Length: 384
Ligand code: C2E
Ligand code: SIN
Ligand code: SIN
Ligand code: FE
Ligand code: FE
Image (tube, rainbow, N blue to C red; front, side):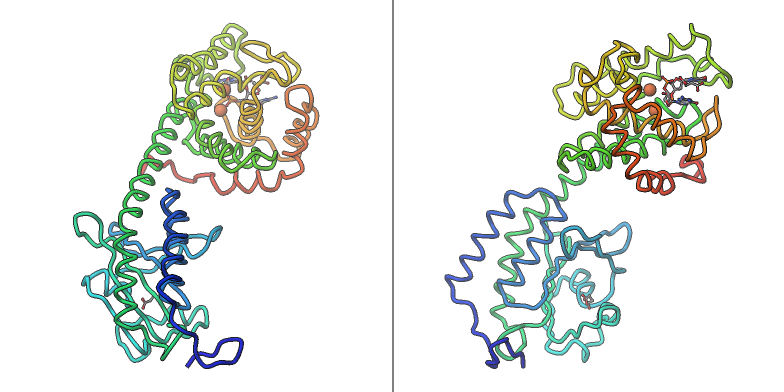
């Protein structure tokens, strides 16, 4: 029996108008959300309040990886458990609703999570979630009923089923949205690699430049949304190198000034590839490709733009790109030790680099080094 803070033995079930109010509040939030992770958090919250459970989780099935996964709160990583296991696994596999009064007396229950967290599961309700064609895509799991006898009732089953049928559509839309976003990201990275791979790199360079650019944008104070756009567009900064002959790009030694003039065209080539696009990310990619070798003092290329004439996004990616180029082996140079890189950024502050960005970068250098280490590959991805 559960005791609330006032010491009374039980709380009342929600009144119909209270249930409606919860429904309307969450319906508005849910319909405006297409981020899958945030949707899962919202739906779990709604289910928990709706049937007065202590916890509620919306598990989604990843058939390929044989896991079910969820997101328990904003900002935290996704949680996953092997599939099929436990009561949620049983529901997803069989399509049956599971209503259990005492989980520890049920052999299907998997106490691994309780073991880890010290939480005591008692009553459990699991119902399947289906997509349009009836395929089971996950399960709604409520744990520990907070009112009455502490067990979930048939009415709770009905209520949660109602919520689940309403949510299936939103989840389906969010899954599709996520698939599109992931596909778009992959195309961007693969496209970006085309420019880089010929200069003896493994594709991790463009990923790192994307991550540094995102971090620098956030540290500078740009919104999550804007920083994400830069993250997506920055991998394509060197796409124009596709048009540079191997004899120049892969020359082990120092370039002649004629050869360097050819190299310089990679900025305008990249710009021309994207400039006609009406898509926001590709417009940004055009700007970054065009301006990432401009310098704060106006001595860069292709147009000798100065200071704030250079788009902020290009100043951000430009600094990220140089940091990574210096920190990596190139066909024409060895990686520099960190102190030498720091010294260069310091010296070039206000010359090559936006002084404010350079200061921010140096103040958080550890975080950039951490990205460099995390995204440095040992084997070439293609060799698998
Ligand atoms: P990248 O290798 O991605 O280098 C990007 C930028 O990082 C360079 O732009 C430069 O600003 C900076 N950077 C890289 N290595 C060094 C260095 O040793 N010292 C200094 N101070 N800065 C460095 P940049 O110079 O406009 O070069 C653009 C691209 O041209 C390079 O991209 C690379 O693909 C090519 N490149 C430049 N120099 C040579 C070279 O001597 N040999 C060959 N084969 N390619 C070169
Ligand atoms: C189960 O469904 O039995 C395991 C998952 C959980 O306890 O949350
Ligand atoms: C190089 O280091 O050989 C080229 C980079 C630069 O412009 O200094
Ligand atoms: Fe470049
Ligand atoms: Fe680059």
